[in-house]
Image 1: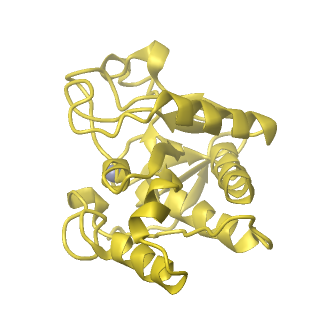
Image 2 (image 1 turned 180 degrees about the vertical axis):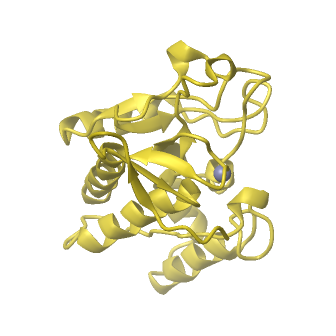
Length: 218
Ligand SMILES: [Zn+2]
């Protein structure tokens, strides 16, 4: 782990440079939003999960049984099958997306890339070589989430993980989708993803908190 502390960057100090923004910068506003909700209409669960960077492997990663079994256990207390709960569930997969980097513009598809300081990124699909190995969220659910963000005055944008065959990547969304729930990736754009020193914008982090709060209170 790099030993340096998080630091403000930019003449207006609008950026935060730190090690491991991916994915603490989505986990932190997620848990803050969960704690800020006082009277949720629906039962909500915030999962801060392990091992996403190695493919969500192991029995603490989302490519395992623990989340489905946890939901089944809760459902059983109400006399319901867990699969009915999962089919009726909606989920935001909070993970970062690649911000457009003016120093390396050729690895981005500029008109489909996310930009720092333009709000949180709604990522319909991730994947490699196009959409290989992705969730590819249902259009109806993407529309529902974007409408919810608009209604809550949350700044949002769309984005994808770099140019086809140049970038690519994945999130936990496909493991949530495999349980039967609706899911879309929503998160903070980051510069220099996976470098020892990653950069995000404060406004985007705040919009993540606002967006996750709106979702949990819907
Ligand atoms: Zn990552």
